Amino acid sequence: MIRPLRNLALVLAAWLAGGGCVYYNGIYNAQAEARQGDVRLRHDDEGGATTRFQRSAAIAESVLVRHPTSKWRPRALYLAARSGALAAQCDRAVPRLRELLAGATLAPADRDRTRLALASCEVRTGRSAAARPRLDSLIGSDRQELARQARIWGARAALSMGDRDAVPAYLGGLGAAVLEWELIAASLSAREYARVESLLVVRARIGDYRDDVARALRELVADGRFEGAERIVGQYDAAGIGDESRARLHFALGDVHLRLGRDSLARHHLFSARTLSRRDTLTAREANARLALLELSRVSSVRELDTLVARQDSVVWRTAYAAVVGERVLLFRLLMAGTVTGDTTGAASFLAAEIARDSLRAPRLARSLFVEIARERPGSPLVPHAWYAAALLEPDSADSWYRRILADHPQSAVAARLRGQEPSDRADFVRAPELLRLHWSETLRRWTDSVRTLRLPPKSSAR
Image 1 (cartoon, helix red, strand yellow):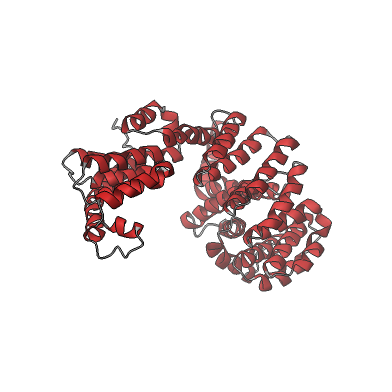
Image 2 (cartoon, rainbow, N blue to C red):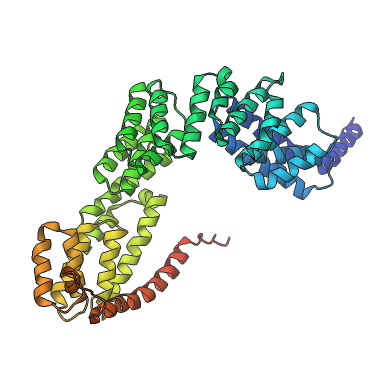
């Protein structure tokens, strides 16, 4: 019995070394990912489907590269082409799809799926007129899911061509939800935000949530539709959808409010996101980082800034948001170090104040630095500019500081501008920007080198 078993083992080893390993390590896994992508399409989870098809295409592509003459090449080509198309990787997928359709090796079902994949890429790349006849011919397929996807892509093709009257005919049999989500997507692409808002309110009222809602909220707020975005999130809250989904919506709304400087609303939604989400999720970590660093708006001195930064734990600093803030803090500190090491004009401090105001969103700190420059460096050509910048950050004191500029620096470009005169013939009109440019160039070079070093992956220790 030992010899036959040994022979069988040798046969299996030879098989695995040849075509078997190609199948199990490549084709099998690519097909498994594609099947999962199809499952998610059946549930209208296009985000999840895209991720699965990306994996399937990547695995199949590796088979094509590593085993170009394998007997599994036709199957790998099919998986790479179809999955690539459904993952929106059309540049690479379309030539492969055409190669498949030009051959004679595809089974009828795979040929139809390939035609559908090609049509999806045609719609994505603005060739909807070419895609529609192909899609129309697939709508009558006895393969239910194929026909369903052909209807959905047919509706998208019609929408991209401005033929909205044809959309109900494509989607009418699939239910109101499918129709409305397609209209939402098309309206977002066309920036028809009033329609997006009204349709989303309807879906939110019945708790019909998709990940696309977060993107829609960001665009609605960016368009100034604050009340509409708040109403949509409120409806989803009332509908009782899952806590993680609600957390993502509150985070999206809080993040865009934060970017627009609406700190109170940002704080409210980010706190809700952190509360609703589990502590170890990306949403919770990013919301917590934003909440922690929102306090930058309240610091009024370098010492307070250093205290706030030191107080944050490593979990906060590992988030993408905190990493960006950390790089801006580094630039601020490099500029302040320039002030300490012999900058008598206050140029480095002026630039640091601008970073505090514009990048760190710390207006109180910026104002204190501008005022410090104006008071402690009376001979600098930057003084009237510093008073003016401080006045913009403290409207209550603006009039008195404007009067001071006119009285103490009447020949400055800033004073000329306040009097409604042409400022370009004043000496500091050129001199002040030159001072700032000199310090900015040198500090930016050092900062860039430092950031590049910080972004390098840590070297693995030798064993």
